[in-house]
Length: 156
Image: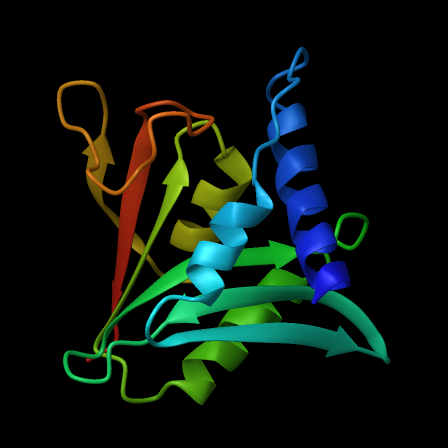
């Protein structure tokens, strides 16, 4: 699990560093990953391609409502823009066919993520968190501050 967390942290760090040249903050602390991994209903996926781990995801499945949450999806740094993220997402959908709605959030500055979720995976932006409309689940010290999009994908 150490390599998994390290790769996830690197992918998130490099993505943020591309937007913030003077970034000296850790974007994804290990505690955030652990909190997700330890949530009720959490499932961690590793993406293996040609024998190499190329990414992964953590989802939280609500067995009663099937309103499920994608906490993290990452593609290992250096393997982006090759369709790996789409392969991961399609496989998650296949592995969770009872899902009625998927939900996730991403910071406003993550243009690649916004493109990915909306244009490649079929999510819709359903809420914009900002200082006048705060997300109660976002920690105060989160990079990206108070500006996040919430996405949903209705499956049925």
